[in-house]
Amino acid sequence: MMLAALAPLASRAAPYAAMVMDARTGQVFHAENATTRLHPASLTKMMTLYIAFEAVERGEISLDTVVTIPRQAAAEPPSELGLVTGQQIRFRYLIRAAAVKSANDAATAIAFAISGSQEAFAARMNRTARAMGMNSTNFINAHGLTANGHMSTAADMTILGRHMIYDWPQYYNLFSRRTTDAGLREVSNTNRRFLDAYAGADGIKTGYTNAAGSNLVASAQRGSERIIVTVFGAPSSAVRNQRVMELMDLGFSRAPSQVAVAALQRPPYLGNQGLPIGGGSRTIRVSGAVQESMRPQVRPIAAPPPVDATLIAAAVAEAVEAPSPAVAAALEAAAAAEGPPMRPEEIVLAAAEVAEEQEVVTRMSTNSGRHWGINVGRYNSNYQAERVLVRIALNEMATLDGGLRRVVRNPRGFDANFMGLSRENAELACRRLQARGTQCFMIQPAGS
Image (cartoon, rainbow, N blue to C red; front, side, top):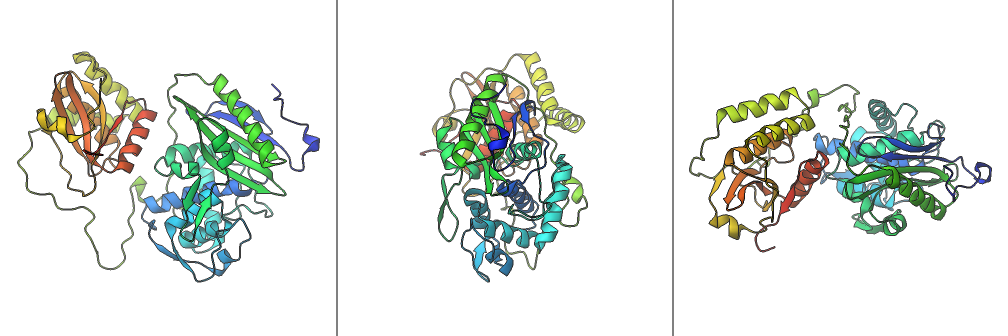
């Protein structure tokens, strides 16, 4: 199928390539020159940001680390934030500037902050790319300005875009921000015209150089369907956006409404040395004396009602033996044997109703400022609700850290809730659970 807006290749200053993918399954609906190695331009910054998010998660650096800008970063040409040598700025602002403004100086500063040099960071980018299956990509720098040997393909960048969406849902909202505070100033999104023009669009990254043309990896979600489109080599941003919208329409026209989300294998954490670290567990770097407790002490409370040991044992065994989607299916089937769970008719938005109902609290959190919660279903029995909560707690241990499992009994059944979460963790947990086919609704704090 030839799209109307696709002009002959000979008329373009840069070679054209495109790919359309169902983000849920990885199924490709359209590809043109998708494996041709071309200049990615600032699409490169997706990998820079991927590694930045990984470094934060693994404790190599924090969002509030103050970074001193090296001479090499300050010397980068536009697009730029305007950093100067020796200036100090928090790491979170570098991330925002690179993601939203596509600032080359910020991307280079990220590279130096994590790996100490552009070359070491590029080596880490390439190791991560290989682990993702991006076998036709080679990175020379963190920003994407044209360099000999700095090449990628539409297929590889589509793979990277899919990883960005599913591996870092807690950060993905950065790419849909029209503006953001980058520390020095408010910056505007280089992709805002496409975001405003196409319903459901929420990212991801633009790129432009003379050698590359106008590039874009874009994603949009409508209902349960999510499409990723990559375009290389458009003659202008306006033409690029029009082509991407046509390709998006093609993708949504072919994507099935209901499909199981295929598990996406996250690449191993390789760090700066290129060796697997920690067997997948999080590594925290501690320097000097501990300044504050990582978790507050639990206030004295009455002992909670005991949870059936066989329940926990069964859930643990199933979680170890099968991946999360399989665990979810097995446990839901077991719960259905006792009686199908009832779909929630309404979600409790404040603590008022909860206080009047009989409830079973099986884990307490004293984290201050954590007043949000999530509901993961309404069930016929306390046992069914608690079983689902245990399963989800095992699979989402990091996301739900500090939360409490709460079964709330009401006239319509037993609500399975996690309470004591921050809004960010509640949103993240729901996105992950919904991606795996588990219903999830956020519970707002009382009085909000």
